[in-house]
Each structure stands twice: as C-alpha cells, then as structure tokens.
Length: 302
Image (cartoon, rainbow, N blue to C red):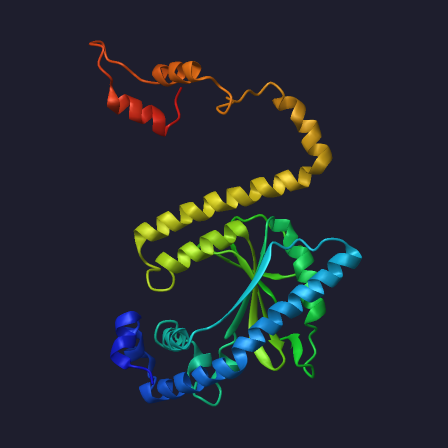
C-alpha cells in the first residue's frame, strides 16, 4: 500500500498530481501490481538482459576485434519512482500517452521499467555499440527480442556531429547528452542508454540537483551549463588523443621532451624546505603575508 502523505512528503509532485486528473486509487493499484511484478519477474529479467548484452558483446569482441566498452549496468525502476514518473508526465509535462494509464496498460506505456546503461570512454566509440545493439535487437514485430523505437541521440546545440546519419539527433540547451534505445526483451520494454563517462558525470549531477523539479532555477541553469561545457571539453580531449593513436603520440612526444617535473619522492629534505620557503610571500616588515600565500597556493603560482 502506498502512503499518500508520506509519498508527497518525499516527492515534490503534489501540485502536479492535482493538475494531472489522475485518481489516487488508480495509482495505488499500479503500485501494488508493480511491486509484485518487479519481485517475481523484472529483477531476474534485468540480470538476464545484462548477461545477454555482455555475452554477445564478448562473442563479437573475440571474433571481430574489441568492442569499445567500459561497463554495463542495469536497474529496475522502484515502485515509488514509477508513480512519481506517471504523475510528472501527466501533471507537469501533460503527456497524452499517460492520459488513460491504469493497471492494465502501464507496462506498455512506461518503457523504462528496466534500464541498462552502457558507458564508453570516447565519443566515437558509440558506433561500435550502436552496430551491436541494432544487430541484437532487429526491427521485427513478431520477435520478443526487438527494437521498439528508432534510436535517438540527445545532444546540445553546437555539439560536433558524430552520428553520420545513423541515428536521429534531438538538440537542446539543457546540456544532457546520451543515446537512447527502446527495446523489447522477452516481451518486456526496456531502455538502453549509451554515453561517455563524462556524460555520465553530468547526467548524474543534473538528475541529483536540477532534473526534473528545478528546470527553471537560474543558478542551476548557469551552473549545469558550465559543467556540461567543461565535461564536453574533457570528451573532446579524450577523442583527440585517441584519434592520434600510437604514431601520433610518438610524433608529438618530441615537442614535450624538454618538459621537467619535480621528483617529490626522491628530492632531499633540504631542497624541499628551500622550495617551500620560496613559495611563501613576505611583507616588508618580514612577516608572512598569509593572504597572498593562500592565493598563490590556489592558483598554483610559483
């Protein structure tokens, strides 16, 4: 049984519920049915899907070269999050698809009850994952393992186009980047998300502090946009490094051969104290200027 008062205390959706036209008894029925459905079927099926992907990716890797894969992990949506999503979709986003949702049809309407996240290191590695997923989940309406919706890439305005027309891109200024695949696995709708490690950092941060209830917070909009740009720069640096490859790294090495780095492990104590003293800023009266010294530490000024 879903406690209404405790639920609205935990999730900030009471206003959206009042606007949604949803019946609380209907949501309770969905909640109770889903608790049993999750425990008896979905938890085990999520593990099966993870293993299915890992095993097939490994087979591909052994025969055709490495699949650029960092990790695969799955989750089953919690019962409370399911109810929260239904309320938000109707009361905030006014999704027509959720208008007549009830215990008889919610399993076909909500298509991320099982979610799989595949992480890669570099942006360009999406393509090997894409080819594998569309091979494992063909667009065949008669199969219980199939692609349900066309894959979609969520990108930010101004992003470099890396998808070569293979996947439809949806642009926004929200900073979120990821590729989404809605598939059917043994009769159950699931969502597979593919993203880089940097995109995962942003997605987790944004979900924690801004999405979905603080979309209009001006501070968080500015802050998250800046973070998105910084993390995209990380992705671009990684991509450029990988594109240079071994020969490029060796060629570039000569331009940095005069770089020097302090060997803190082997430096003697007298030298270390001397360097520490030299970094301290002193005033004319021979007293330590702590303010300037702290500034130098933070900006790493020597």
